[in-house]
Image (cartoon, rainbow, N blue to C red):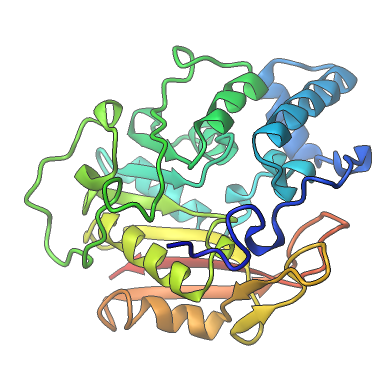
Length: 302
């Protein structure tokens, strides 16, 4: 069963194979530029730009997401979220706290968190297409040896990959798995201290977003302070947003801050067992984005 609004090749208006690249879309700010230089070792800005263009072209051949065309994989999304300091605090203060970056694409957000101090040995990543993770190594001039963070490809809706269960309210009885030995996420149920999911939920319709929320909730540790956070397309009122994509007729299902809060506090988790923070803000620096808002959010176990 597909949970995409427009099908697997046109989810939420995020895909368009016919649009030509525009060099003006390459516009990293100073913080992003400094991060790219530090990670790649390429200090010449023109050489760095051409390097990013090549990776972009290779990625677009794998799957033509608009976020690839717009260079969103260069944005430091995670570091601009209100919950980011809480993530780093967990990494510093909670022994062995597992951090999952799901829908990670090239892995820039996981790399940023590690650069800012999150213990690399406790980080794990996942995306549907493993080719993007390999391109992440190309983009950041790394190898599985120099950047050994485990990547586990898989579909979060596939019950064989991630069993959908009710959230934990007591510690799980299963042992904490070896992150480097995982081939699915079911052994992680109840063991993950922090989950980051950005530009992910809005790829699916209302039912798909609910099922995805359930799946991630089952992974989350019941320990107070454990967190799921991210950002995606949102709206002042819950419903279909016809400004979600570039092309006429494309749209995405958007939650409002109120409906997003109700989803997590009462539907996914027992009411009163989590604190939900959700706010609308400017969507992107991209001049192509017509949708007016992104939903920035976090769910914290109480």
